[in-house]
Image 1 (cartoon, rainbow, N blue to C red):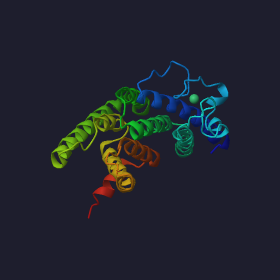
Image 2: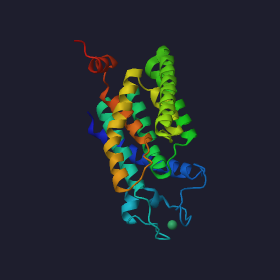
Image 3: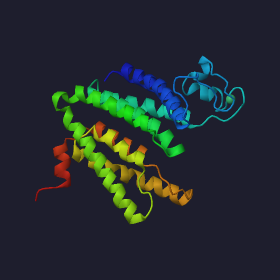
Image 4: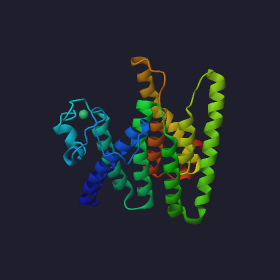
Length: 255
Ligand SMILES: [Zn+2]
């Protein structure tokens, strides 16, 4: 394992994480991603190159805009570091491979959805569509001629989630799952064999349970975004790289 590459992936992650912030915060507010240049959302002052350096600019400015002194969301530096750490772990675990490309793509997807889903309770459709297309392209390299199977897996996961929502709505007489989560499951379902995807959903629930419990009791917040948990569960299973057959044997042990 090359330490230089680890450092490079960390720096690469900081830069990409900073771009993910721009995409997430602008899409949440329906602004264009490309134009205008990065600016303070409060006073519209265009950021200078120094103010664009990930994490460090936040620390130097003590978390406030240089011009209007408005507080900058702590999500900015946290997301940048989060992306950098995920990039570094992905490289460390997977080495140079198509799975590494996919892990990096899922890391950025995660960071964007954390912002949009946690702050605004949405996963913008064009974000999910963009990632679905990117994953389909990566699949063509990962699996060659058998990549069409994964398109079917994605569609099955979509239908499964849709049925789950319908049943949930009947049982709880209210919105149980967001439409964004169902579309998200299509994109994520493209990445793994079916059994791994079902396992990922279970893992997502397992991670979400204590956190949503905290939100429910401490903040009396009834809407708990599920999207970030789904993506991180799929990313964890990709990094663990468990064979579908061993998952099957784990779930249905032969006596
Ligand atoms: Zn400002």
